[in-house]
Image (cartoon, rainbow, N blue to C red; front, side, top):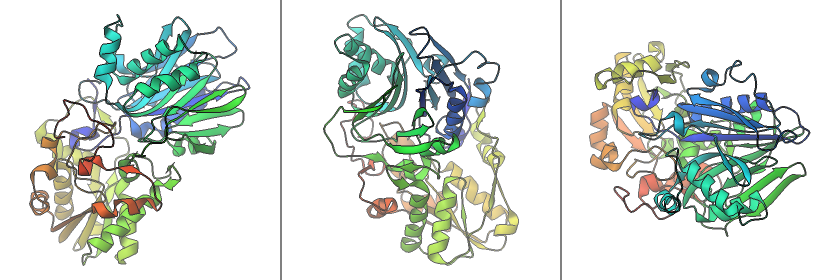
Length: 473
């Protein structure tokens, strides 16, 4: 079983990233797909896949390459030698507990009476049990446990009574509750869809005669594509040889972008609905310096997402910024799940401290979150062992108190340290000299503009219904 290395030391994960390309002049898009997915690798490191078709070739012929592992491991030159086509969909995935199976790798390819349908999904559908039961009662047989298969089945059903696949998608997504950013491929069309709350990002790009859907603008930059616009919350976008066509599946609802996309998940060079992720993290650091000042000699960030917030803290406070950590960039996954006793060693494999930066100094350490507390305790200990006289921890998010149902791997409430202990108790447990979190009332200031966002993992105020069996509601 392939385990995600970072998960073993208590960090959070997005579930996946999606990418799609359609070259209307018929040029091969496989290399663009590969490098686009490579740029989204941070969004999922357990499985990946690419599905390719030729709009001018035999209708419904789809070639794919997918498996458990990283893009560089699965989509090798040898494995992709026969993949050729001008339309493609790709996916990278981090699985929730019990779902890291080869059968759950995406994109999923379905054959049905109207032809073929290929789908890649980012997010989490809340009413999957109801939708799945509805299908099972009419004889549907499932090969996976992922939401994407349920979504695809409902699209296929709607297609039987619709004039086009985009009409079928527009009708099918109205049944979905929760978060979805979808990229779909039919024999002659590429389709993107985003839930009406806009939980997770999805944007449109263009490179020459190619149109692109991507979870992040950073992946557009990686393939030298021009950013066109974001897919709007509640929008279905169809791309064919005639260009871009837009349909709205829902009336505008209260929008609820995942705030953790800005805090941690997205790459810092990504823009999400007009907001720079990098600037958001800088602002988070500035806010921490305003609300939790401290006398110190150096500000350091825990790589990677903590670095920008640390720079913001330094800029606001006037305390020098330092690079105290060396990160092993080649540690992404491991084939051996570390035992509890080895988790401290696991942190040291991933991060090492530069004693020259912290020795004899009072250190402000900026990180994006504290989940269970184990990782933070280990990093504080490493800093003090390297000679730091004081370590003041600042967190660029509020305390986690509730699980997420929209595609973020936040544990259940009883596993969240802030659910059971006060801030002072957490400070003592991780060995810090002081501890400060980003306050809830300043969370929106990170964005620099008035955008609706979801903070349910901090407040318990979910923007949608949550499952009847949801824990710690």
